[in-house]
Length: 238
Image 1: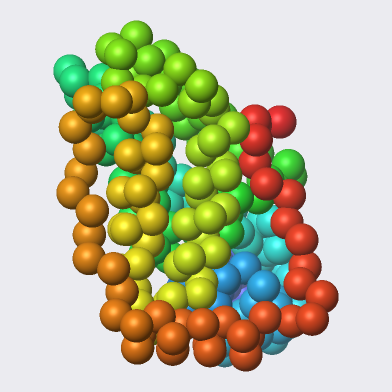
Image 2: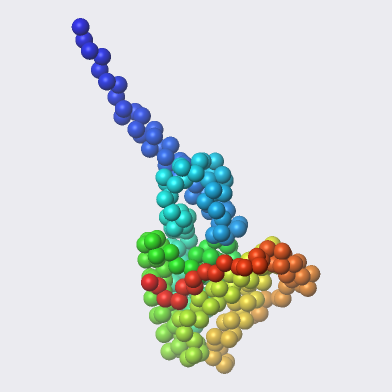
């Protein structure tokens, strides 16, 4: 009499791994949509609902919020690093510096979540912080080159960049769909402030219409909590 053999499990395990990977991608896609639309304040439960998975599944794939943020914004941080490298490759130091400023602010405008990421630190998300450190050191070189060319004001420091990013993030959040191009005017004004007298700067974009700016102010008044949460701004990488 023969003993029935144990059914092989090799056909089941790949299916389980594939299902887990699908869930992971669904979670990342859902978080990317919510973060881009609403910023990083979205709850993990909301991400799970958007992805169509349970809270336990979300927790298995991403044990912490920082793990999820690192996965969602890995490609955005790659773009951030690429923007620095592109600027450093520009033979014109001022054009490279100004181009980097505009490129990063445009990345903020395209994704509210990334606007938050650029003004916060996530010490547990090592890959994300490593990319940030790379970009930071590249930015220091951009500053030195632009100052040596005589076009960047000598009083400009690397601390002015997070200040600009925080201001830009605030403008983006406030204007949203009411006056979505307003950030470009802010950046143009800031580049004029950073430049030495006589340096050519980008033309100033049109101001938002009174009606669109009023809509933005009303929207901001409705969405601002009485006690707004604070964030830890990035001054230098940890």
